[in-house]
Length: 187
Image (cartoon, rainbow, N blue to C red):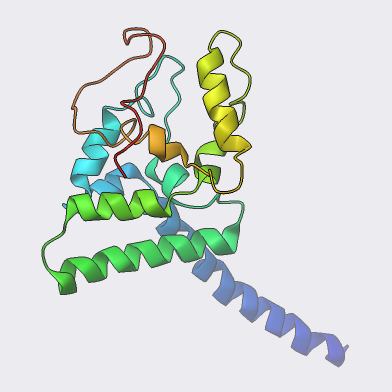
């Protein structure tokens, strides 16, 4: 009987310590994963305002894509998600306090350079099935099945889709069909 008492006490103490620690960590991650939290930083506020006027928030399907959906790995990859979230949050705070003036355009270019097509393809999986838009289907095929040396990123064409300075809400039913990006960004 004595050999079960020590393990039972250790398990009980572990639960008493681990459960509140897990709850605090989870609560913190949930509370800091909202666009409202991102907008609480005045450097990021223009990006959140632009996001609110984009089709990733205002669309006929009613789907809302948060900051976290594009800028962080999928939450199912728990370690990568926590690491990326912590890294980006601490980096932004350090830049705010130690670097000085926040250069929004430089930050935008750095974000686009770091952006990976997998971030878009978490949601946009069916890029090659557009029966009524052959040009878009062929353009996406050249990205999905790129030849070596001709690789492209989604943001090379769609750089103006979410974080645009246009300040207009463009609902799918009122914009001109088909959507045409402004073209390739000047490299």
